[in-house]
Every structure is written in C-alpha cells, then in structure tokens.
Length: 280
Image 1 (cartoon, one colour):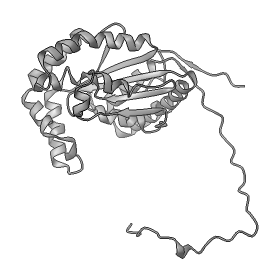
Image 2 (image 1 turned 60 degrees about the vertical axis):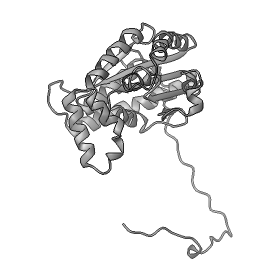
Image 3 (image 1 turned 180 degrees about the vertical axis):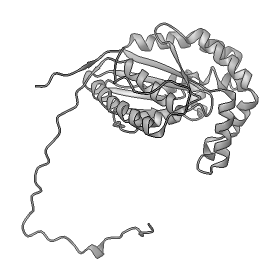
Image 4 (image 1 turned 45 degrees about the horizontal axis):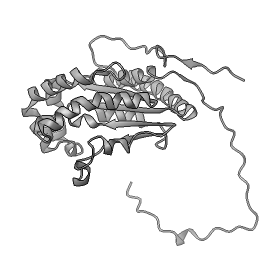
C-alpha cells in the first residue's frame, strides 16, 4: 500500500514557479498553476467527505472585485454534492421578519460538506448599512451578535474562513466599463452596483468598521489583493488549501471492464428518435 501524503497548513500544494514581479501573469503559467491547485482541491474535497468536516468559506468585497470568478475556479472540478455555492437574493417579506441570521443558518453545511458563500450575512454591514436598508438599531445589533454567532459556529465544529477581495477604484472602474461593453456581462451590473460607485468612501468606512468588530481571533478576515484577477484566484485557492490539513485519498485508477453484448437484442430504428438540429 502506498503511503498517503499529509498536507499541513503551511504546505498544501507544491510551491508554484511563478515570479512575483509586478507584471502580467502569462495565460500558460496561470493555467498550469490553476490545474495544479484544482488537483489539490479535489484531494481536499475527498478529505472533507472522509473526515466529515463542515467547512464554510465566505467571499466578500466590492462589486467586480473577482469573487465570482474565484468561486467558479474553485468549483470547476469539484463534486457539487460535496461542495456547493450559496448566493442568496433579496430577502422575502417572511425572511425580513425572521431572526437576521436565520436564512443563512439553513444553508450551513452538514458533515462532509463545504459551502462557499458568494456574499453572506455581511450584507448587513455593507450594502444594507450604506444604502439605508436596515435601521441603526438593527445594525448595532448585528455588530454585537455577529462575532458571537461566528464563535458559536466555530465552537460547533464548523471551519469558518472569511475572504475580503480588495480592489482599487481604478481597477473597479475598468471592470465596470468592460461589463458595459460586453453584452454577455451586462447582467452583472445592476442599478445598485452603479449607485455603489457614488458611495465609494461610504463603503470604505463601512468595511473598516466591519473589520473592527468582526476580525476576531476565532474567525479572522483574510484580505485578497484582487487588482490582478489571475493572481488573486491562485493566491486565494492556495491559501484555502493551506487552511485545512488534509491527506491524499485519491483512489487508484480504475480498469474498465469489457462491454458485454447481449445476444438477440435489436435496437429500435434511429429514425424513431428526435435529434436537435446540427447548426454547427
């Protein structure tokens, strides 16, 4: 039996051969490093399932900071039955009448699962705070209860990891313009996103205040320099892998058995089936 390799928090994947100079990362190097990291993510996934871990990863940051792109690369090769994404919309009237954290608790992982929150309960400290969608008392209650809520999650055995994607004003402007020009991306821009451009400093103040009371020892914030999308994705995945010690449980390659042909079976005529038009 081959000996399983254990990955510590300090070293999860191979050290990438990427120069840290301030220049554009080539597509070839990016894809090569991403492929390596995605292999490690599959190993992590199998370890989470085997050890019945409960993992929550929160992705927060300004609009167009690159949260969605990073989540997409994490999920690309993973089993959606083990790792899933939660991206909740505007709360319903019933949800507004519930305990604030209630609609998020229903999305928390069971044993053997990892959940990626594409925005989270921190909406209250961000958009709700800045846009006036919550009262001052509701906000103050959030500042008191959020740290205790997260400590409770950690005490219950949940591994809670929080990422803040930091993007500059200039880079966000560039990405907004790209979305406006590309019909495939315009859905990513909402009137709320455009309004947030006018309130840049208000969002900055809200983020700083949020960090002040929620950057706790049991669940600290990890800031991602997100001006370079490719590097941000690689750095985030590498850091995520380093946060959970895991072993390589990759099974040995399977040998496909020969296909057995049944005697006397005749397939129905192919003309009985309806095929889609072959446009391409």
